[in-house]
Length: 506
Image (cartoon, rainbow, N blue to C red; front, side, top):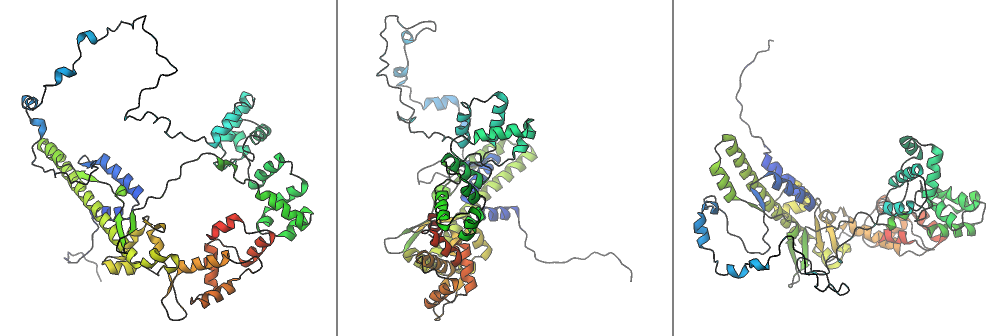
């Protein structure tokens, strides 16, 4: 059978993703911070886009392409409209102007510098300078200040600067001493000697290479680094597992002494560098606000501060397009105009879609807003998509990296989508998040002598009408970083529940 070439015409339908549609989809899934950065790039790239600087809610008149430009107005016509009747009052006499080489009168009295006040700052705020924020001192700044009075020679001072630069924000040295010696052409003994000097700086424990060394430096300063404590620091893994018998064997002390040494470790600071300034924490800015309405319902509105306000400068387009003679220039202006119009339309559609999805989520989770997490309903993307006649992928993009502020706190929109756990009595299914909250409450309220196993938690939840397996309880407990019953029994046997353990449960 011979292969031949031939021409065929086929008709079919395909879905083509245009660049404009891809841009709209991209904008839909961006967070407010990413959206602001994207808009800034478009403002720099597209000359027909401009930011709407109006602060009031009044709509400004729409600019049209055929609006007359004021630049072409005759100068004498423009000046004829100005009122110069008060101009003479603003002028200064020639006698009031000092000569450039003149000096103040010699006999003039000097100002009283004890009562002299500085001129007010622009805007009338005289104390604005005192209220300005100052950059907080970092750990490296504090260490360099101590290095300036350490009395090291030039070579050792360079090694100390390299060591300080290698210390991270929590106070640990994250670079090998041998690497610093190779880079600076120094010996390993010199680097170790300078490192001991840096480890003597405040805060105590800075410059340590691991947790054990950090705790040892603090214990040495307190005079408590004895052989038993050294053995304890060498087996911190046993301390984490609460293996009292193993610690007694390695430290050659009894259980009471081990408990006392563990109590001393708890009083130390494992991350000494955190006491100093670092990068400011950026708070989460919600995209949607939910407030209780006077009629008992919920009022949903968008956060106007996160919505970019852009305008298409049709007047500037008409001005430039009228002077464009080159074909490429006209094509470029047309593309810029189409891109600007589509961007403004996409931003408006994005805002409407977010509001529509958020309103439906609030409607579905009304019980959660009124009564708390125990009343959170099981919810999936399909339920929201069917209710608002959208595709699941659209709802998924809208709920990604978007936050909603409610009377119960700020939540990501994804938080309200939880799996369903069947009920034992045929009632409505329970939300997985509400079940996790119930497990957290049971563990938090258990007594020291009545530690509940996973099987016991299953029995209690079954009695509450929740049909759940033991492996599901263990999975939820591990996700919330709650120790097992054996580890909790060891923890509470040594001492009362630790603050960090309590915080993990809340």
